[in-house]
Image (cartoon, rainbow, N blue to C red; front, side, top):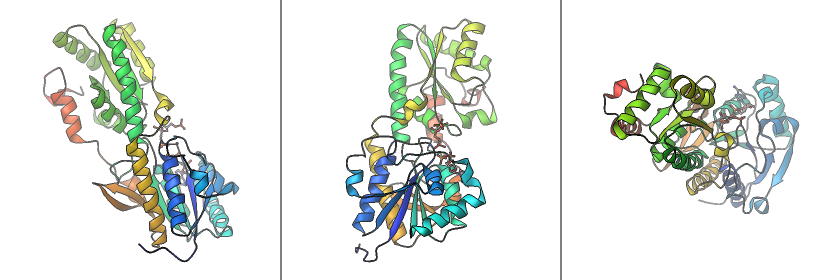
Length: 344
Ligand SMILES: Nc1ncnc2c1ncn2[C@@H]1O[C@H](COP(=O)(O)OP(=O)(O)O)[C@@H](O)[C@H]1O
Ligand SMILES: O=P(O)(O)OC[C@H]1O[C@](O)(COP(=O)(O)O)[C@@H](O)[C@@H]1O
C-alpha cells in the first residue's frame, strides 16, 4: 500500500460504555494515521466532547504503552442530547471548523446510531469500530471487549464454584449484556454452569421459579448434593440475582447466594484477542477513511476484514450460537430430557 501524500486530519471518539481494548483501538488509529501522514484529533467524552469542542491532538507518544489498559485515555460518555438534530449540526460545524475530514467512532450500537445521525449533517467520512463488551453488533464475529468480559466472568464463575462446591450451595452470578446473552452463554459454557438465563431464551418463554427449582432438584437427584451455578444476564429477573436468590432461600429453603459482577467485567488487562482485534480494526478504520469509504463499521468475519453499513449493525441481529446452546442444553445438561422442556 502506498503512503498517502495528502495530509488529512481525522477525528476519533470513544463513546458509550467503555470496553477493554478501546485504548488498543485508539493506539491503532493514531499509529495508522501517522503512518499515512494524517493528523489525529481526539474528542474527549464521546459525543459530549464533540459538542463542547473538547479536543486534543494525539500523536504516537500519546498512545505509547496504553494497549494493555482497559478504560479509555480520551474518556467515554453517554450523551442523550446527541440524538437531537441540532446536536448533529453543531458537531458537524465543530468538525468542519477544525478541518477534520474523517471521524472514527469507537463504541456500540448507540454510538453507531449517533454516527449515522451525524452523517446526515456532515460530509466527512465516518467509520465505526465495534467497541462494547456485549457483542451485540451485527456484522462482526466479535466486538472489542467481549473476549475480556467473558474471561473475567469465567474467572469469577470458577472462583464461585470453589465455594459453591465446598458448601453445597446454589449461586446465581449476574453478568452484563443488557439485551444480548453472548457474555452469559460463553462464560456459562467456559465455566460449566448448570443453568443460563439469557435475554434470547427469556423472550419466547420466560423461566418460572418453579422451573428453576425443578431443575436444581433434578440435578441434585442425578449428582447428589453439590454445587449448582447459574449465570443470569442482567435485567432478566425482577430484582436480579439478589431477588432470585432470596426467593430460592425463602420460598424453597435452598441455600443460595447472589454474585453481581457488574463493571468488574469492563476492567483489567484486555485479553490478547481483544488487543489484536482492536489493533486490526483501528488500522482498518483509518485505511477505509483514506480510501474514501464512509458510513460503515470496520469488522472482522471469519478472519476477514469486512465493512458493514452502519444501519445494518443495529437493524440486523446476530443470534446466539445455536450449537453452543444445543451443547449446553442437551449434552452438558446433567438432567437428560428433551431440549424443548429446558426453558419451561
Ligand atoms: N438514536 C441515536 N441518535 C443519535 N445519537 C445516539 C442515538 N443513540 C445513541 N446515541 C449516542 O450514542 C451514545 C452512546 O450510546 P449508548 O447506547 O449509550 O452506548 P453504546 O454505543 O455502547 O451502545 C449515546 O449516549 C448518544 O450520545
Ligand atoms: O456503565 P453503565 O452506564 O452503567 O452501563 C451498563 C451497561 O453497559 C454495558 O456494559 C455495555 O453496554 P453498551 O455497549 O451499550 O454501552 C452493558 O452490558 C451494561 O448494561
